[in-house]
Image 1: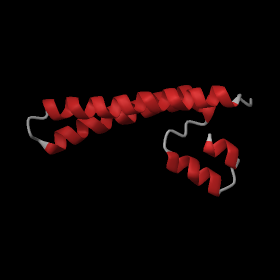
Image 2: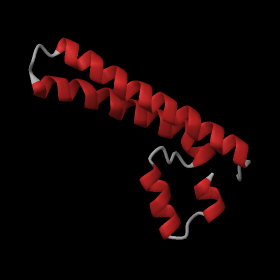
Image 3: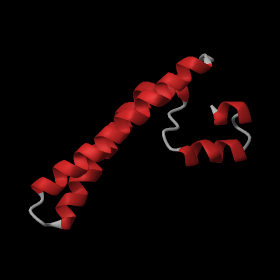
Image 4: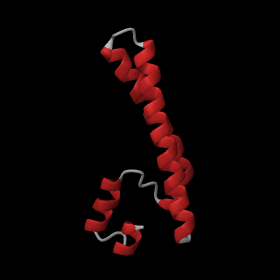
Amino acid sequence: MEQGLDRRLGAEFIGTAFLLATVVGSGIMAENLAGGNVAVALLGNTIPTGAILVVLITMLGPVSGAHFNPAVTFAFLLRKEIALQQSVA
């Protein structure tokens, strides 16, 4: 089912905002709770990031394709799986 461009852009915006908030928030939380242990801080950041990606891709993937990373969009453009107008938007 083809979604409208405004709906896809909205989904990408919401997904990117949630991903950014999760990465920053979990990074701050992990740094505060790790007690100087870098491995624990890294683990405390990567687990929430992976979890939110699973949730966002499951929820927003059918709407927008869940390209929250511009590099993914660029790769799809190079493979001609999306149009230039769609990738710029």
